[in-house]
Length: 74
Image (cartoon, rainbow, N blue to C red; front, side, top):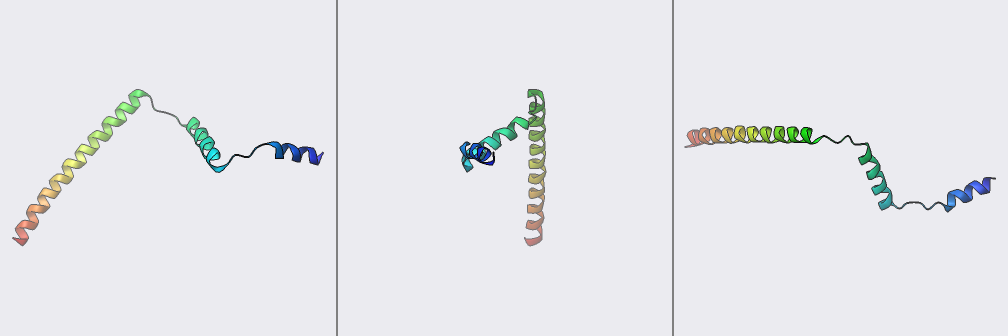
């Protein structure tokens, strides 16, 4: 009986690393809870607003520090 089980295991073709990678990736993607269109839109708007706000803040700080250093060194 032990040989019968071993022969069944041996007959199954093992996946190589690339096949295993893609099958595991597909398995993980099936577990993902994808956002709805409305959630994706809302999150995109939040990201754009935060990016613009931080850009303005950093631009303002850069301007202030440039003027401050020009005043100190000039």
